[in-house]
Image (cartoon, rainbow, N blue to C red; front, side, top):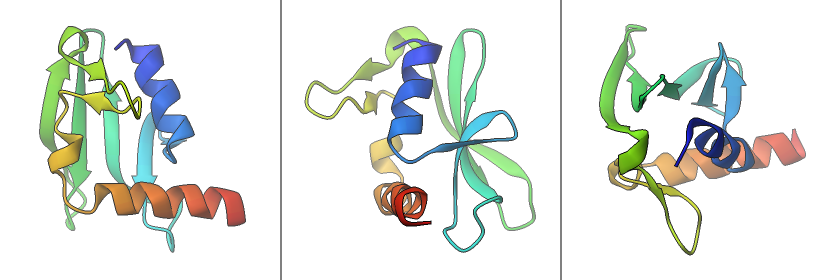
Length: 100
């Protein structure tokens, strides 16, 4: 997947651009991102914000290693499926966009 494909997937899956990064936030604090995709020139990283406010890289891959799932279009190779609660957080963000 390319940078543009990842951005398009994220935005249609409930992510919002906050601070220049596709991000997920808690529904009760929509302007405060807790998960973000850092899209660099050759790699994409998934970062989670710790309670102290520091960002921690939890996974990353080059764009060539990231492929789209045939059924869902979700990126494979980033480890998003291994992050507990991420699908629920994405659903909460989609719902807040629709009903907010």
